[in-house]
Image (cartoon, rainbow, N blue to C red):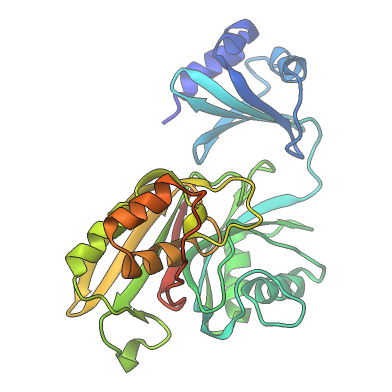
Length: 326
């Protein structure tokens, strides 16, 4: 947790503030374009004890003086990022946490002619505000994939209480979409770029059960302990080129913090996978690999991404975007 009192003291002494600025710290404007230190320094130098507020937002701190905003990211005693807005934003920004059953949708990202989660949400917001309101989701999911804690941000054209927005959206939402929360955030907040980590669940059973059709996958796992051990090989930082649809990805290195298998009931299991970010189809291909390959083959595929190996895609319906941390 950020020490607000300590940061407050640094803000009153620009040289001290600069001393704690990491040499490779990101300094960005409202459009996420780089700025020079003098621009941020001018704002900090202009502060007096009476004319600014300092408040936490997720893992950042927001410093506000009139129409100017500064967002500070800290790692212990080191400032690793600054974001600066030099003029008052024209719209208020909201963050929305939502869930959905993806069975009847062609994925979450908007498509010209197919039903998608984004299309439904933006239609609801357009009806509510009587103008186009576009969402920026933190993540996209494929057809048949579900979410319990998806996040998106959007800018509203006129003021409205977050609780009112949540209430009205839930009244308009189809039965397979639910709005869990809406809250005001600073103009800096970006649902996609500010993510610290994501957690996915993959729910599966060893035999078909009509009660969970389209909600769990059926996997041919003969030895559940061996399957779990093979999944554990994906923990850590690796090049996942052989375990994702990564043809257009510039960087295929990702970090998986944890892979945990939990027994839910007889023949019913949940894989919980947490990572800083994921490539397209990465989780389903990790599971597909654990179903078809032994541990040494998976390890070799991670160690030698330049050696192409066959890819297997696990069924989609068992995958859930569970939670996103900022």
